[in-house]
Length: 206
Image 1 (tube, rainbow, N blue to C red):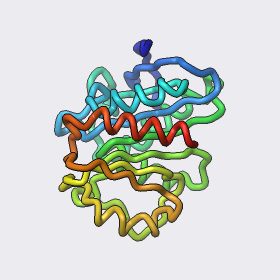
Image 2 (image 1 turned 90 degrees about the vertical axis):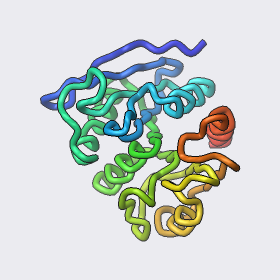
Image 3 (image 1 turned 30 degrees about the horizontal axis):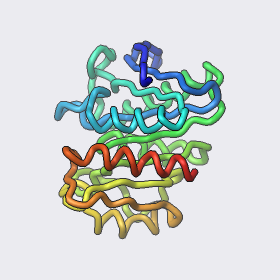
Image 4 (image 1 turned 60 degrees about the vertical axis):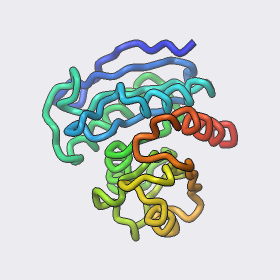
């Protein structure tokens, strides 16, 4: 059964609100949410199915609210300070003894992870992106993106056009796999369980 507990952890001057489900003592996944100025938070439906996918495969999960969202202190920082929130989540899990920590982000959350990854390279974390909004924000489509392994996108996503992402992958990480969910848009809607199933399959095969 998928049962999370609410936690709070420190990010320098701020306290961030998160939710953990402990299925492993050694490996964990951090999941980052969509744009908070457009209603995104850790309770987003896509974030929930990603967390469930990891938990199904016996990964501990940590989803959290970026600064200024929900009960997390601070204020929105246009994706810059949010990178430090990601690092704070990683540091928290390391203190708890987790040895393998993967990262997964949806939409704005994927963009934050991309920028974090480039600044922290080299790092040992594998990343999965869901609907990276390359048509909405600058992802640096012709720059290496260390750590990205799988990318999930809807075939009708205007924020994350399949053609743009397919063209970027050789620059980001040539070995990264693109998974296209037919007839889905940026929000997945009735395709959420398809997303969860495909996400789970990549975990089985990793």
